[in-house]
Image (cartoon, rainbow, N blue to C red; front, side, top):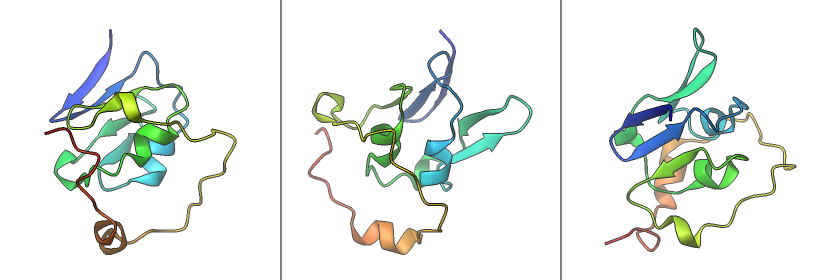
Length: 102
């Protein structure tokens, strides 16, 4: 199995269809590898454990070891993700620890 692993976030590249939703929703954590044409985990320390990347991934290719994956509901992949920037401060303002595994 091909995995991109850094810290608590993993991308299973064998499942990834390279749609880029994770990168578009969270460019602080993910980057796009132009050479391999796939997303990679760039800076997991920037992750606020919101779970948006996991919920948006159409192929369940993103795993997060600090989150309880059994309670996740996937977001309909037919939804369009805006390319409008979201501020890091805005995301931090909505941060919660309710979804974290203790």
